[in-house]
Amino acid sequence: MYNPMSLEGKRILVTGASSGIGAACAIEASKLGASLVLTGRREDALKGTLEACTGSGHAIIPGDITSNLFVDDLIARSAVLDGLVYAAGIAPMIPARYISEDKMLETFRVNCFAFLRIIGLLSQNKFHKSPFSAVAISSTSAFVGVPGGAVYCASKGAMSASIKALAVELSPKGMRVNSVCPSTIRTPMFEREVGGNAQLSEGLVAKIREKQPLGIGLPGQVASVVCFLLSEASSFMTGTDVLVDGGKLAL
Image (cartoon, rainbow, N blue to C red; front, side, top):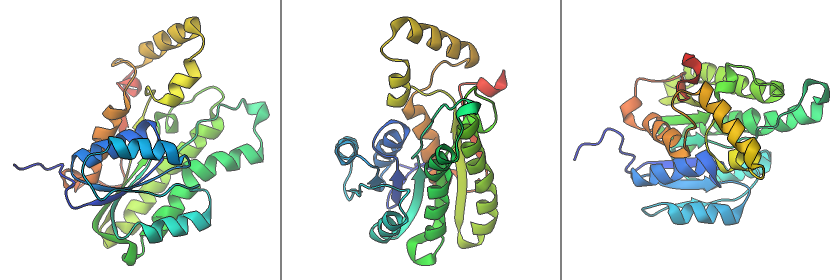
C-alpha cells in the first residue's frame, strides 16, 4: 500500500533518544520502517527506547555529543545515513543577572554547536546518502520571549537561523535541513519541573492552556511532524521552521 511517509530502507541517527521528544521520534520512525542509530548520555534509557522500537537493525551508541571525539566516532560507526533527528537539548532558566559565560557555553554546546558539528561531518559524501533529510528540534522560544530564558532562547534562535544557511549550502548535495519548533510538550523534563507541588502544577498547567489553544502537547505529536520531514512526503521543504505549538503563536 502506498505510504508517502514510509521510511523503509532508511537509516536515521537520533540524538537525545533517551527520553521525551527524541525517544518518541525514534519509536515513530521505527514504526514507519526506519533502522535507527540511537544516541544519548544514559545507556539504560537508550536501551528502554530501543525496546520500544519496532523492526530490526537498530543500534545504540551512548555518549556525550558535546565531545568532538565522541561525535567523530559516532558518525564513523553509524554507517551511511539517510537522515538525522537532532533532539538533544537542555533548557536552563537563568535570570539575566546570573548569566555567565560558562552557562552560555554549556547551553550552546548542547543546543547548537554539536548539531552544527554533526551536520558538518555528515555533509561529507561518504557519510550520507542522497536524498538526505536532517530535522533539528528547535523551539517556539526562538521567536517569543520567556522570563529567565535569554540563554535558552538565544541557543534555539541560533539553531533556527543556522538551518536556513545549511539548507542553501547543502541542497546541491541532496541534503534537506529543517527544524521543528514545539511549544510546551509534556515530556519527562516538563513533568520534573512541575512535579512535587500539586498546587503549582495545577496553576502552571492552567496558565499554559490559556496560551496554547490546543492545550499541552505530547511527544508523539511532535514526532509525527518530524517523521513527515524525514520522509519523501516533504521532499520540497528545506530551510523551514515548522511550528508544532498548539496554536500558541497564533494568539
